[in-house]
Image (tube, rainbow, N blue to C red; front, top):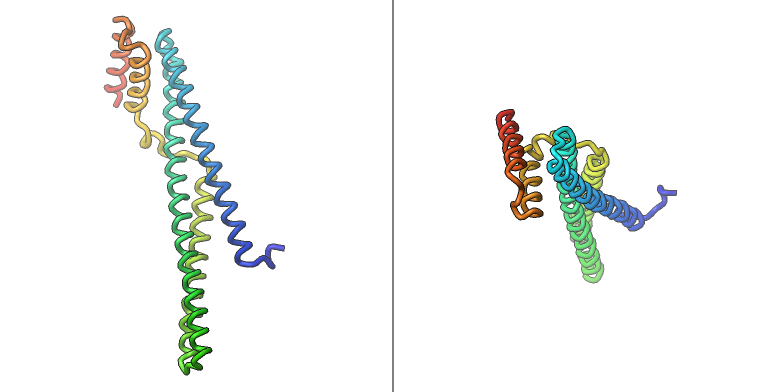
Length: 199
């Protein structure tokens, strides 16, 4: 039963769960990047054939996907930073334990009358380390809950229409070397002017 697990066993289990969460986020970011490229390709095709309804739909999907990707990247950065803080805290706790053991050994050898004070300080340090570890557990749980919600809020603020248009235009120009015919160029400029007026 989990109630009888040692601190080391619980720590190993937490590390495994954290690693699973990080790997899941990385896979999700990779998948979103593939979807983004796919939407860009489809939007380019819609532009070429002059299908404005499909183009508008694909731009919305590209915008949503780009916003989700950016949010997942932020979440991954948050978890990686939290793990780094957790590792540092555990290292500090190990150091405190080692120093406590050294202090106890010295006190035992010399029969120091200050042993009670040393032990009190050691216990206080251990309580602080344990409190820090508990706070880190709560923080990681809250972060993991945020990652698993799957909701992307405020995607309009994360990725603007201008950014989406720029992505699509750069792809088309790169692929065709700027050789769009005049009618298509005029159509794209009209769409851009209309979007600018709406903003």
